[in-house]
Length: 493
Image 1: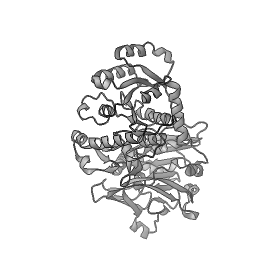
Image 2: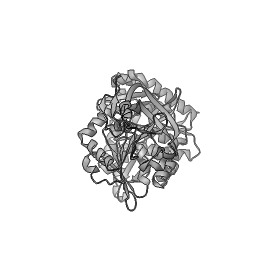
Image 3: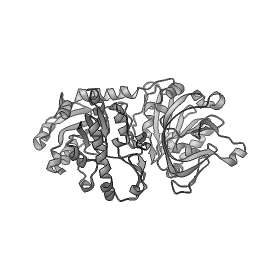
Image 4: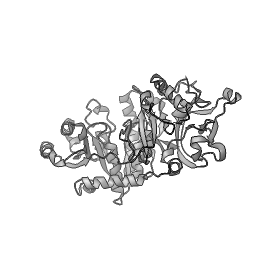
């Protein structure tokens, strides 16, 4: 079996590649086909734990969700190379699910040569096991300065003779120029792989686009196969650093959950379910002013971070440390996840040059010690029952949960503070979760809490739409808006 490959390319980053690739995965899976996603290289601090030959590893969250949409078991071959930015000029390189320190230090072009064999092996393995592989490109395929070292766009498309869709965000303006310019910069053998253009995020009367699509086809020979309307509430988690500022709940807002959006925020996709809770407003904040209107019933979340100490320094520079402390002092809920948990403690200690040393926010009597080994695993556990959970978080007492860990370092009770009677309540086993005595400050290492239906029911008395409902909605959407028969023709040619 050699799978037919369908590839989604974009004229720019943010054009809608991930969204459309996810929709295609579910569309083809509903045709009774065996489907797998693939992206050779992803740059994102949103990662998920999946199966690998060594037990477990990391891939980009987008490919994880695409695998679920395809009704496939996620594995590291679906995203063999993951770049996790730690600074503006440096990324941690994850190859086949595991951190590779040698590649992390290697120049970009040399790295491309080194990883191409693994990329080909991963893609060919998926092609041999499936009927269709839905491939996502990265950025633009017409970045001619990178063409010689390309390992994620047209080199992949040529390797598997992919039928390519080129997507442009028409809401930004200039979509026809983007499509034509991208096509014009590609060599002839690469142009031949593009089977159709897609206009994404259109608002208004589609008939007003004429005669532009026809004129574009006359110049390129490529038809515009779909005009996809703007769709804000599709339910798929946002990719990378894109924040949906339209996270306004239907009906009267009774609670605001403010997520501090520091520069190296990670795993922001885990907050998507909160956007669907009645009466809850999800707000991304970057300044004390944005926290000024919070009440005692509102929450502040310190999310995960790919550079915890650097983001903690940023938080202090903005004055957000004082805002978080004031909210906690008056009894407001503060919740730290992974790097956010580490920030809530008294101190972060690094003797190996992993992340850096820093004093914490002092809201929990804990200390974190960074270590070279990285914890990457799925975890099933339960919150403490009885009196172990107090205050605002008492609703979680005894609730069983599942999630995933991706972190350096371990966190424990601060010995000196313990001797003084300042005790952190262990609310999850094995150092995974802690709460203060007042019961309003909680920190856990486990990602994915809000994706657990039992947690949503306990905290909010509500259910969010399941991912299956979201994926089916995406497939229904493209079925309505693509020209009849073209998606099937791409895998039957």
